[in-house]
Structures are given as C-alpha cells and as structure tokens.
Length: 227
Image (cartoon, rainbow, N blue to C red):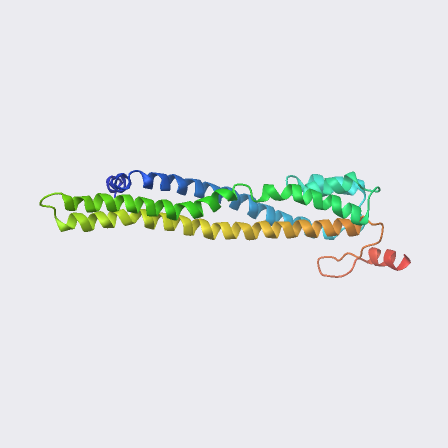
C-alpha cells in the first residue's frame, strides 16, 4: 500500500478518509498528552501521600513547606487551602473547604478527554458515511456500457476501507479513554486520602505514624499515651 493508493482511497470516499486521518492525529495527540500528565501525577502523588503519612501534627509552616514540595501536583491546592485555614477551622468545616478544592481541581484532570469521547462516537459513523459514498462510485460503474465486474468488486473493497478505518480509530480511542478515566479516578482517590490525612493532622490530636518497616513512631506513641 503506497501513497498513491492511499490518495486514491481518500478521493474515492470524497475526502472522508482525510477527515478520519485528521481525527486520528488529534486522538494520538490527546493520548500522548494525557498519558504523560496522568501517569506522572499518579506516580508523584503516591510518593507524596507516603511522605505526608509520615508526619504527625501539621501546622501552617509545615503545610506551606509541603505545598512548595508538591509543586504543580493537584495535592498542592489542598495543602494551600489547609494552610490558609490552619488554626482557624477544624473538623467538618475544614473538610468542606478541602472538598471545595477537590471540586475545583477535578475538571483539570480530565481535560481534553471529551475529544476522545467525541471521536469514539463520530469515527464509526463517519467511516460508514465514507463507505456509502464509495458504494455509489462502485455501482455507478454498472451504468457504463462494457463495464468489467472487477471494477465493481474492487470499488466495493475500496469503499469498505472507510468503515474499517473508522472502527479502528474508535476502538483505539475507547481503550485509551477507559484507561484515562481509571487514572483520573485513582488521582481523585489520592486527593481524598490527602484530605483525610490533613483533617486528622490538623485537629490538634496526636497521630501515630509508622516508619518504612511498619513500626510506630516512638515519639508519637508517647505523645498519644500522655494525652
């Protein structure tokens, strides 16, 4: 299959294959962008959650330091919200403010995924439309005197390329769309974990932390027993 034949197929579908090719490029661009961002956010978020879990109580200074360490992670917004309300708001009131931060962050996580959702629906329909147009060209040969049967069957085969292309684009998009949605869900779970940790470490009560081997922090245990 050379470039000349691909151009012939695209022209046979009256340009529908050109549109499908453009949709494939958009789909691949979204896949690369979201894969890089979501994968990086999950891996860095897991490390950050583990680091946060090693802290006992958190004051405003510690929260600001952690927010700077978080950088551009979604968790940084939660930490800045917690630092702004440190010593002023606790319990359910603090949980509501942290939940508000999560709701603001959420749309940024699934950014551009609507493009994949649209392509998944549109590509098979557009491919079918291109095949129908190709069928018109194929069977129009029957109206010509002295037509060869191979012209009709060859035209039908060329017309079906549009449907196959649309289905391939849709299947590729569906697999990645579901994978990205699962990654977004994992990030939201990380944010919920951070929110719970912040509430527990800002209520003024001691929190027993654990080291890398699973042993409780001796200082934290002593404070908890003294309280």
